[in-house]
Image 1 (tube, helix red, strand yellow):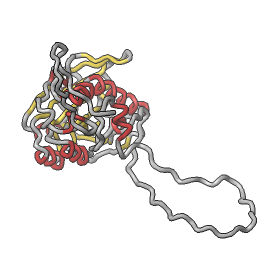
Image 2 (cartoon, one colour):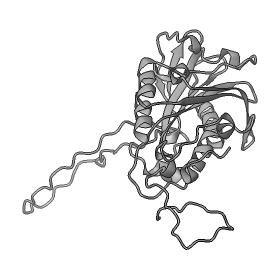
Image 3 (cartoon, rainbow, N blue to C red):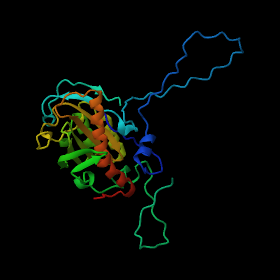
Length: 309
């Protein structure tokens, strides 16, 4: 599956203050240029006019297209659906069933209120993700508590329970596929933190993971290799539902956010391929959970460069 937006690098000097503003500025959006269509009916004859030199044609920019019913930019892109035989943690991949979801000035650092000085305050790093552009300006390691502070997430009456978490330093153990493992290694990944969730009704479950890389460029590389064979490894839980996570058909996607790669895997409880209605429900769960957890935490890092937990 290819859910919320793929994050791109940027040279903007203004740090990002909201996800919507950042997403809207990223290239490779979900809309494709459309060719003009002539109106129906026969064309009328017109009087001959002096020939006018035609302006040179402009080659349209061609971009890959994805669509989501909750399209807000790249974070809302639909996932690629494919079929896994057996537990994904065992890395047993069978013939895949693939479906695309149609789916101001530099900020000044805060100082203590009691401190008074005539010296100028330091400016935040330039770029869309400010401090979070690179590990050098955002050095604190991620923590489980920072990314997933509560066991339950509730959004507009929809409730989700976190069943298990994992924090690993050997990043290859948190991902499946040779290309993504290679990209994590070359990007000097130091940790992957994952958490698995299920909805209240017990019909939807999935894993959200964040990889800590050295730079925006490295995170972009990890995002670019995401596919039906390269994705976050589903994290199985001990409860009756999420212990089977990773079997059957699942949706996966990777987004870049500064020097982080946000990776997801979500599926129906029985691993069945969802219809359009089911796809919307799965995407809604991903959107609810990631906005309330990982993206909220990473938004804070763009402003401070430090862990909020």
